[in-house]
Image (cartoon, rainbow, N blue to C red; front, side):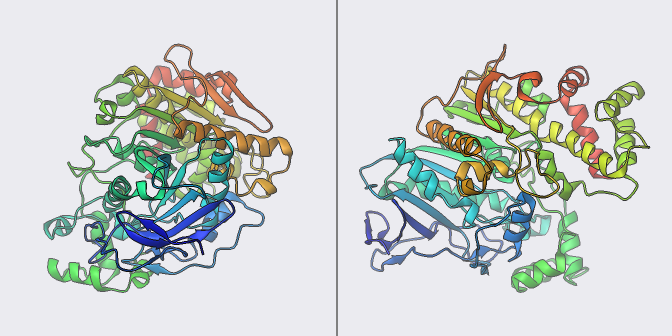
Length: 527
């Protein structure tokens, strides 16, 4: 246990000493009266010593979710995580990691991170997000940072919405509102841990990155810089308000046909894990256009053409954005394989949305015919998902901010997954997090791969510190930083140089990203 920190606005707080760092774990930033309530900042009397030596319970989510994530990454020997308690009300917490030498006068840049997990699972306490090595590396660079991992409500508590809930005062997009409350907490209290509240970089991966892009609709400045790793609101689109998921949830809980007040009571009083078990994945929750936090739904072409200027253009300093060469590997969850039907699903969706000639070209680009072996057809459809849901958004956001005069740094993560499993040899989804946080460097196969991981961390840390991590992207011949198998190069951001599909880029120039996005939606609906 570290010596108690005498924090000016919180009081005394006990952290956990690490190797060159101090962790303040499970620091509560939000107080809840029930699972759907708006969270409020905690009040500190300053009389008790706060114990921040262990993680807070996870927000309501499957206790085995960490095993699911490790399996997706194909980690050969994942670090053990035994703290699997979950809580309806006690999970809104931060994990803060600071250099040993941090004081209230340090004013170190702050790197806040929003974990991924499809807005369904995830926990910044999982071993993959341990920031010890990342913070130590910042000290070695002589540009120390303070790291903050944010936990927020997920699934039903975080994103179920309906007219009944709204009428009762339960707002939509509660998980995103939790994140914004966490940023307000940092503005009030991070200085006492050695961080600069005026110098916060908000980062996220996958659904965490999508979360960050939704905060770009805020008129209020929430952070100084943004790092978007393999995810955006174009991946997790906000839908119009609807009662569909609410009705499904109520039916699963035996509340169908009951008066509104009984439905609300049933949803708020049933035991949390019991609720998750009964509803399962049948109620599809997610972002909703509420006219408040989320005002509209972006499209790739809309961002490129500047149909709406994101409010963040007025207050953000710079953006870093990138993708993995096969982020589409995560599509195994949203586009599961259909026995003897993968090729047909793709071809039918293309023909429904595009002209006959356009559909023919698209299926040729991805080498899919009705005679394509089923496993290969499925993988090829995931390559299409990769290109429209992960690669295209990087171009859309880079164009949007660059056109507004904001510096954008684009990267391409091409390092192959070295571990046994279906994605071995591919730059699969979530692998970038393993590289960034440095926690599995010892499991990488070569010194060169470890140096790539260290180089990725260095560039993220440089950006967080306000430095230029690599050349700024430009509309006319922009550059991208490519994290490869054994080296890092800054090259022209063209498909030929970065290993992306040139046929897709050329086809999208003719058809438009939005039309291709419609094909993906049609596939997900099974059209």
